[in-house]
Length: 305
Image 1 (cartoon, rainbow, N blue to C red):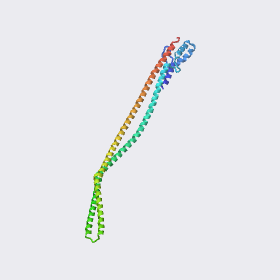
Image 2: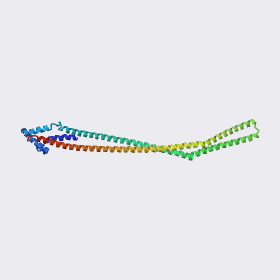
Image 3: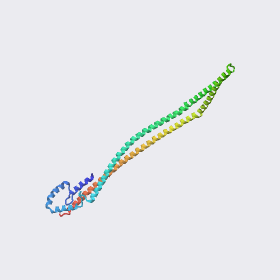
Image 4: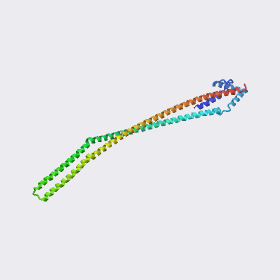
């Protein structure tokens, strides 16, 4: 991390004493001059005085070699670096959660699409069957049931007519017959009762035929038409529901894309802030080196020649 680099720079600047004229020297030259000065310090009071002045100049620094003001600046850099590190961690977690939500949404959307397609297919089948029922009723069922009713009514009328003819024949036959009145009356009464039943049955069949043509079949036709209308509405609703689901899925995808772009922008912002922080640290380190060199030069110049 860059703040650790600051410590190294401070240590280097504190150790890199300049010459009495304040010119900068390299690390190798510094090592040579330190070795040369070690022997000279033992016998030279002037060099000892310079070291005392340098120690006094650095007395305001903490153990890391930085002044309280510089220490506060370095702490600020450390805080910003920690904040950026946490932003990166939060960004990585948000990105992972986004991918998890995207994968979960993909599964849910696939299930929703399958359900919507099945619902539309079922609604189309129901509507088709209802339409076929109406067409079959109009083209086949209604005419067939009317024909059956007419055939049954005609059979009833024929049976009634035959029974009447039979009664007439019996009356003619028993009119000139030698049979007793009791026998003739029994036969004629039986035929008359059968004729009455035939007339009553024929009358009921006429009523049922009229009801079939005027009430039953029209109501069945109306029921089939209403079922067809309901199935058509259900089909349209299923298609609208599928379209609504598609729009919601498109919106969800747009939201995911927007969130993904936000994550990219956030990562770019973090990288930019890190670059700005590094630049500020570089400027701060260069200024620290200049200030340290100036302080060391002033401390060295303050001693006796």
